Image (cartoon, rainbow, N blue to C red; front, side, top):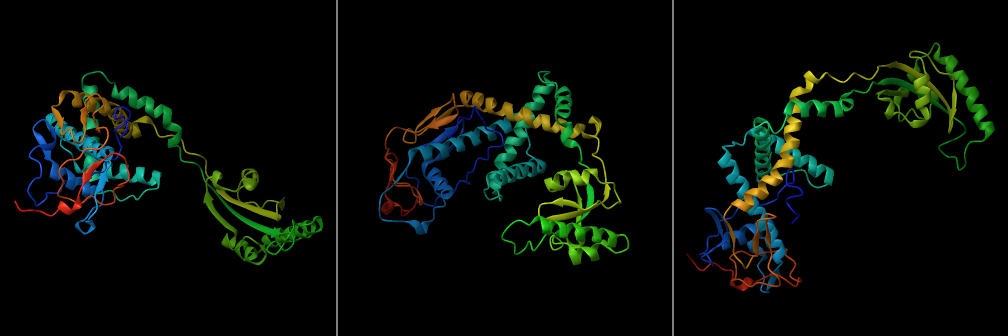
Length: 372
């Protein structure tokens, strides 16, 4: 479990909804309690099993050991989420559908960047929406108290990033590449003689283009016509053009054919059809709302980590010592040393590495419900 003082905002806390087990509770006391909210040991095991992808069909007759660090991490997430939920209630924050939409987008973006599946669960979205809503309230509270000048911060954010708001200009162009020799079957670079033949053919192509259709001529003579049908490169920012042809494109006069230019593999004929300049950045007033929202988000991300630590210190949190001890300074459950052996839970914990040195002993042979 990472230290929450370093980062909490936009870190997707992956948990599962607590499952209610139909059997009687194995333990009388709770696994954890936050103020007046608690979770039984059986329900905690069931939630952990669900999070691990366990199912009833995975029951075995051997004794598995669950790493206490894994249980402590999972319990830490649950307690942090409960602290967050109670904080929302205390501040009167209502999570909106817009918060949920933003949360889903943030999770999908994070998943895309990490190469993981981008299909967040309803629980993930709700937790992230809670974080989004609370972080925004913390930022607004700071602005209302005068501790934060939102407008000044938004204007500075605009100044620092306005160049990224420029829309690059586009250049529309056509190309014909007359090959030097048989490039498709060549085993060596074209010879000087082959380049001379290609130059003469390219000059003849330029003469034809004075009266013939560019696409027709391209289909007959250009070796790149399959990649660029009709020789049409389309309209692209200059950065999208091959590096070798950028100087030719930038120097060309729109509407005119360039002279054949020797490049690797043959002679290139270029026609720039049109170009548009880069746009000017929009005035601040046009993006003020977005800048303010971005500032609120950034401030909230910085504030909520400290808020959670303060909340953890003030809250009445207790943890069953078999799972560890609560560390309010870092808002996390510290697992016990070595192995703890509580009574058997009512859920099977599948897919857990049984080879570790520390863990909670589980005997699946005793997992059958015995009635209520």
